[in-house]
Image (cartoon, rainbow, N blue to C red; front, side, top):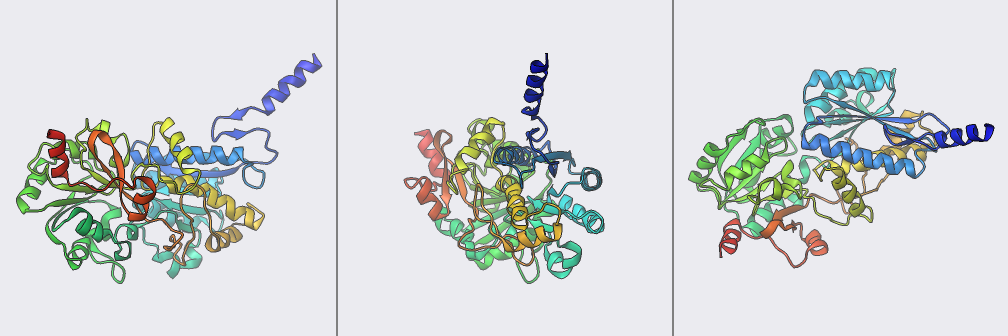
Length: 423
């Protein structure tokens, strides 16, 4: 009997706790990480899957200082009061050392809440998928917001002359006249209005670069009828559409575009379901010629990139603009904590994140005085991919990425692709 009891105890001690995949054999209490996401969106789906994969791998590799890591998830449903309530719970009740907040509006609301909680509940906030987040607050009010880091490439990755995005339009596509469609949402404010001292409105940015903007409009993220807009775009004389999308129903948009007077215009989309490799099937093959940023293509950033994407697809999710942020984020925390030697000294952990370099599945992460990712030779800017014949999804920008992934391919104009298919 005693032997049987001992065997049962051993079995139980080696069991896996499903929530966060925490191994019960860890001796110490878990390090808790919270995630506040819009779980019914493709962003929420992809970010959550990425965090689950990351934390599962982290625990299998020994956790943080020998302690397991536990993930606690909350759904903010893109409603700020829910985000604030979830944040308070994760910090005050669950005692999370790190919280991931998703979305510009949600992240800012959480940061304001965190600034009041931090003195009594020291912790770190990583904002992901937050292109419009005002990180001036860290530099201007450091003591109040030192816990906040933007673990996301940000607006400047697609909106910066140094990254040659306009060269992609001018030289690769051949754009001369541009139509701008911009989601009316927090993250696009910089695109629509500009940011003094940093970025002009995107219309001005394009025109200074020699591309005429002949049409511009904002779109509602709940929009389902795009034909009137597409008819106006076609009538404007535009040859290319640049759609700053993320939460838009891009499947519906593309299906309507393919049947509209604008169907032969080139389309570059920012993000959303259009980044998924499965987008081709979602649209019934209507995505022919569509280009999107941060495509779900196996770019070998590190040796872990391909295995990570395989696990992501097995979970039924795909690569989004913030996917690597979610996957790499727990490893940034691990590196910072293990550099300080303690998960309890939050001030030291913040300093370690500020001064360190961290890498897991993608590029090397390091942060400037505004707690934004530094740009430089160790940093990989956004790639752009295009759906070609039979759903082939290839990198078409930047040149260095194209050369290491699919060197025999190149961008093809939509009108040319349609002719090839029709032949």
